[in-house]
Image: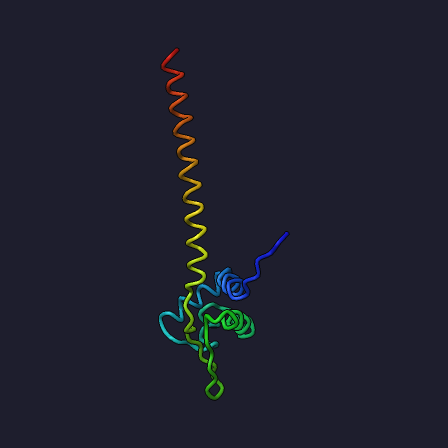
Length: 119
């Protein structure tokens, strides 16, 4: 099987595949937060939160900065335009296929109705 390699896309989708990480993004969209406060908010260990933040950081979705003993998280600066384009291309493909399926179902329904009316 041939695989298309797109590491940034893979990292982004892998990072966003987890509900906790999506929640972290939502929290950081409201305000910057320390890893400790994120861990408290999501009721998880500091170690667990650090791992989630590292995944988001590798994907470029979060930036951390350490000041003293506190590591603060902010949203990353990169856009999700490549991911949005990929999703849009497949959304259009699926939409076209569903429209074709709707046409087939409509034709089959019409044929059934025509056959029932003839009896």
